[in-house]
Image (cartoon, rainbow, N blue to C red):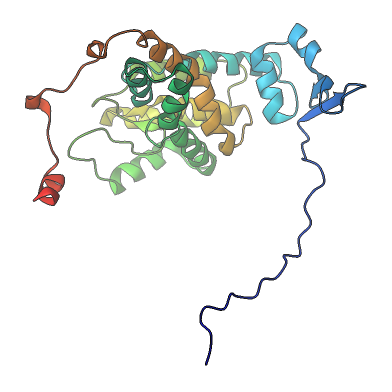
Length: 280
């Protein structure tokens, strides 16, 4: 008779782990009396204190991810994008999350993580930036206007709400968001702009008659593509760029009463039909 409670045979995995944490990004020289404390740090070979003295934040951010310092034109474009994204505005879901956390008396240290968890999403967040970067990289060899017409013919506009016909492109509150479209135009004029911004501009122009255009994640994605960043980095970089505005809005409401934020009244509180049926 077989004993069903007998434990399965345990075999040791034949793997060998690294003896040190590997990184080509950062080098630390230990102090003479403590190997765990660095006396000097280098980022891709550049001394940290020299970077502090001679370089901008945008320069070092570019270096951190790309392994080399940007040209002056590349740094100008990246810094302009960082300023453009610094505050997604109080209508953005991530900003509302920060404001609700602040007015709800959440510890200040938790406001930004709460907001960034929303900003990492697929709707107007970091997830959409990464998707847009991949979309642009796949589409650059195609005719932008033809691609737009193909998507318009294949897809169906939703009966209500906004339509993101492609990652990074669509409507906002039922129309074309003017700020991202103006930003894209300015970025396209900068010397460091490249194929992604040019293709996106042609794509947005083809979508304009249908009340669709650039969205902020799309603009950020095009700039990051032109600067040589990998799509995997795009989502996190967008969170970094928008973080100051999220934190500022959350802290602004941290000392205010909960009544400082709107509360939905009964007339506008609508339960979805499917949810209503589930409750029966």
